[in-house]
Image (cartoon, rainbow, N blue to C red; front, side, top):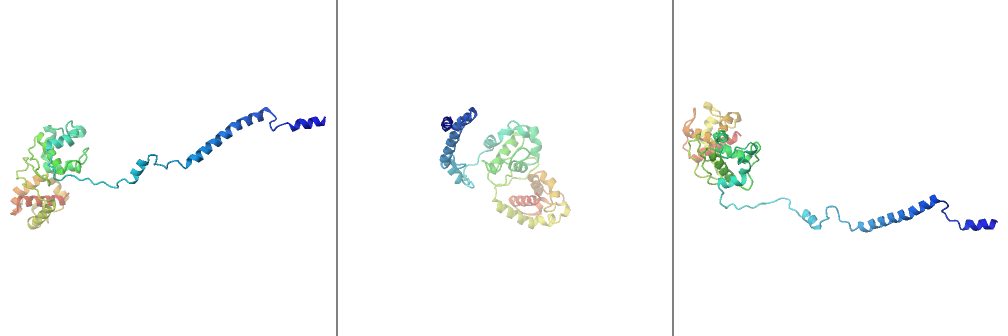
Length: 270
């Protein structure tokens, strides 16, 4: 009898009930699956591309990309006219009056702006005003932007002459200015030097100390209402004389040098 029991125990496995059988079956499937997944991940880990290098060409381009950009323009190309610049740069807003821009040909909207003077309008265009972003430094140069300003303003009732060359766009022929425009624009450095020299020679006597009601040099408060009328109006006053100031400030300077002196003083008060 004991021999039979020993014989049965010898043939009995580790699985003694249905629960153990179920666990064994599940493990026999799950363990190999995880083992295979782990092996695959291990084998492919060395071949995985680094972050940002899924596209090798793109990665190389990013590593060698330029730090800055130099744009070379043809300085000798013909200047484009005001209408052409308007259509290419300004029409987006000024054709429809979007974002508060004065609509092309609307005399009522352009009237108050024209009274401020051509230079004031140009500076507003170059530096930006209200919703309008600065237009300087774009596809068109400053003179071309000034031409577009003249084109739009003239469509609204002004009589501004279109600037002929680069430099200070001063060609105001509005009623507020009866002075003849400067015939040719000198280099900015020369204009600045001439203006300072004439100021020290003829204007400093009064404007240096604010004598006889002259706005003192560098006094922003005193110059503000004058500059608000536009640089052309200030220049016209210098040419014709105003208050205690004689015509042309009593100097025998050229129109170009006289305007340079006015701009030199105006710039010091901004």
